[in-house]
Image (cartoon, rainbow, N blue to C red; front, top):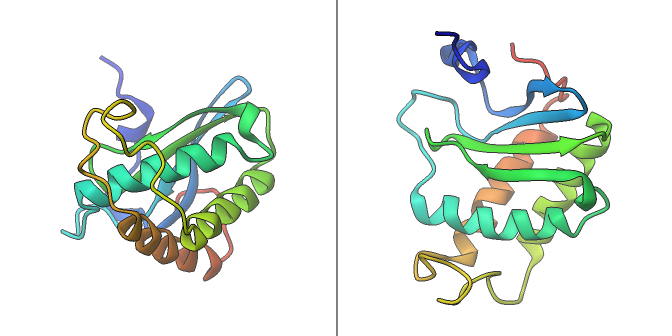
Length: 150
């Protein structure tokens, strides 16, 4: 049986950053790696869930919103996948940074925080999403993003 693309990358060599995981026609899968894999520093569930709600809402309402296919967490708790159709990588990176800034500065309620909107609505915390967004934005601003795994 063939390995899936994400299992073909040496996770001991992946650092925090943003990478192109795979390209399928006009759909690009971005690996938004927020933690170095296998180091014991994982994103806790409430932070991951909260960031998913906030980021997904903002990115689907951004300038690339109509091209967003999916945004969701990695099961290994080290980041998220963002799938985007037919959009230049630098535009996606700029949008990711804008969305992170929107989350950091958000003063309203957590998006999708009611029983009707979410199957685990009590497991949300805006401050957790904001802290993780600030952490990841610092990573993205600290180095050139080449979108290639090291």
